[in-house]
Image 1: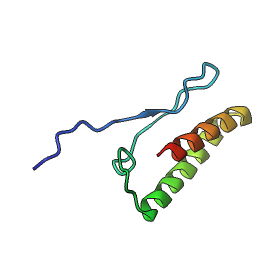
Image 2 (image 1 turned 180 degrees about the vertical axis):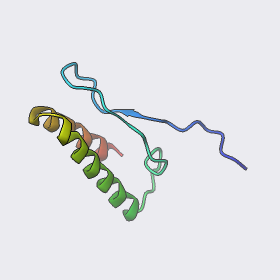
Image 3 (image 1 turned 180 degrees about the horizontal axis):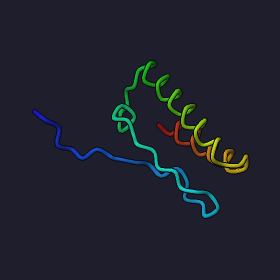
Length: 78
């Protein structure tokens, strides 16, 4: 039986007016999974690190720090 539930496509990282809004595709494992095992968490951390490297190439330090603060907040709320 095929899952017909619509999959969330993006999450808004920042709504602050001085920052660009980054929209990142969500992985199915991350969305709504309450019982992630350690390997899923490690994979999420690696994904955040890779995303951060891409963001660093395009933004200045103040923006990077604000984005990283929000990423940490989001990761802790999972």
